[in-house]
Image (cartoon, rainbow, N blue to C red; front, side, top):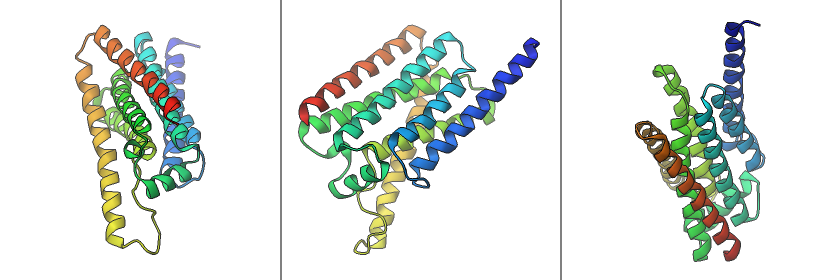
Length: 227
């Protein structure tokens, strides 16, 4: 096979993995399909794989490390509530409140650290991808939105149970307005951060990723001692 043919095959596989992963992740995260958090993470893993096929060695390492951090952060949220089911994570937050605000103090601190680590890692994950032109940036924003949706689902979530007969409609709208603003905010900050960190030396980007990994490990230690 010629180099041109190989390049086309890699490009096709990359696009298929990114599209398929995005569909799977959004299907679970939007509630269109019921299932565990790990299924959504599996979709994000496919997206990361597809993106990495278009990167150099350093970009692949940065992207893989970024995925490892926010996947680990999702694991901390699952440990906090003792479940991997997305529906149960949403429900418990609807009753008790967002993961990052619910005590004990050690558990809340762990959730905040995990969220911060995942946010930094997501920005670097965006940085790692080679993006050229409006179409590629639009697709990157969609992928970042999927990760942001997973983070908000795991650590913030709606404060009320949707469809509950004793909840006024305006409270439902307000809850989802805050939820949508949180998703949009994380997406904007991550994409903007990804643009800015492209201007930094590779050593600084590596240092930021190490910081995110250390913060995640501290969060894991805290959640283990708090529960």
